[in-house]
Image (tube, rainbow, N blue to C red):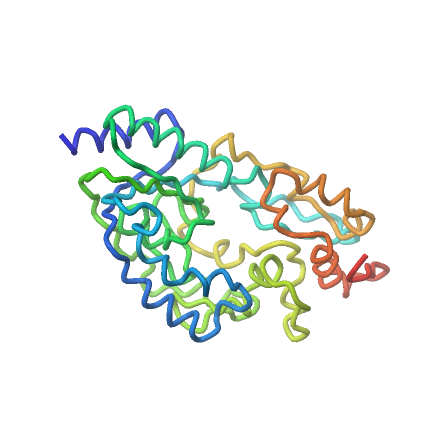
Length: 321
């Protein structure tokens, strides 16, 4: 029976593959595609051209697998407890977003999804499947909410009542018709902590982020000069930003530690302007190897470093090294 197979798939994903959350939804069209189209039309995606180019694909899992009937949604927590203590005031931190202080999650999750797909093939010979992480053109947070993993909060992150929002998502799109789980409902209530905490006021309304003002976008995705007006708010963020998640009440009691496969590389949480200023391109490649930091090339590292160091006495790295 399909329900028995669904239970087997979930048990294997949890107990053997180590996913923290697993749920199943249909491969039906996603209503969020209309909101995405409006967001792109308003230019809120900035210069992320790939978002505009793939917007028409993201609401339909059949673009990934024409025979798709179900989507198995998974999540892994990267929550590791409180931030490390502040460094000596003379050594300004160059802050890296918490998700990026570890092995590249794309590799970790994709490999496990492939193993899950093979398990599906063993239990249901002939079944088709395809793994996806966030590089695939798919509205994965909407799928995860529909599969019961959490809800999309006002800060646009997926939030789970037990694990909070420090979650990394993945999907296995399959031709199997599996019984779907109940979608999760919203539990943000009247809380607006994330909206008010954003240093650059990137949320123009609950659930709508203007990427052009978002620190994560500016420090990772954006390739041009950083906006002068936002430079004070960018400090001390070198790569990404956790502010809207750090203030979320649902993260206060999330249980650490995360999976050992995503264990924090301690030095990445203790980078300083001084230590990075002396790095050449080869040194940056060595530090960022095998982590999400590899997305930041050396010229943009220098750009970001210059931005966060401009109010540090005695430290004035040049934007281009």
